[in-house]
Image 1 (cartoon, rainbow, N blue to C red):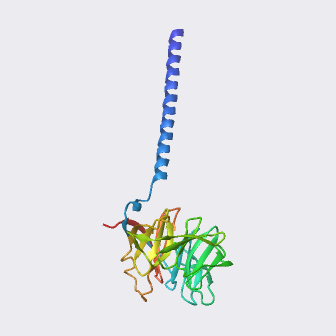
Image 2 (image 1 turned 180 degrees about the vertical axis):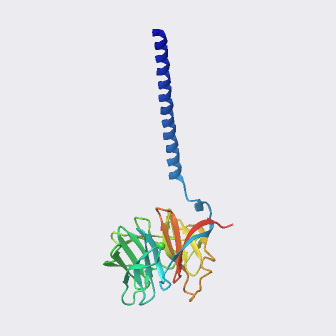
Image 3 (image 1 turned 60 degrees about the vertical axis):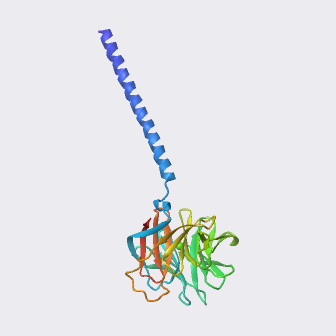
Length: 282
Ligand SMILES: [Ca+2]
């Protein structure tokens, strides 16, 4: 009897050890699997980066003020921040995404013609076209903080989270230190060695600078270090259902939701904002 119980106990011990080992192995496998998954997530690039020639698929349409002559456009803390142009109609706005309702707006006085805008460290930086003056506002209250100066024309503005990145209507992109609002350097934007001029509204997207090319339906993707054009996004036809009231009502607004990886585009006085997916142009 003693031997029989001893054998039973040994068998039970063997089973328990085996179960512990299996659980332990499973946990180890799970840990390895999680590690591989995390590695893959970290190394995954958006699919569109593989193609130099891109077009779009519309995901959804959102309302946009048809009187907003869009010059700067971005998403900040769940709201559109929009800079509008034209004399006596220029403004900086906080706008509700789903409804297009303007929640807060500050008009630019005098002959200031609003241009590109971006948000960095809780502050909106906004350019004007020919006045060689920019403005800094509190991003939440739109309270004016100060002006800053630059040479030449102001067109588009974005940020990589550290620097202000500005276009001026030529093939040159300028970089500024936001703390001192001091010019640091430029890049020259070229595609196959040829300069790409008329770079307008900007957006920093996944380590690249996206730029609307004025009076075209093209966005160029720019290497922020070399200035080389990495690819072109053809948005022809995106606004075909819209009735254009002016030849000036061109594509000119790119906003990127970096958390959700969503891309939006609009144009000057377009009644809609389009959320789009980028796909290969065949
Ligand atoms: Ca933008």
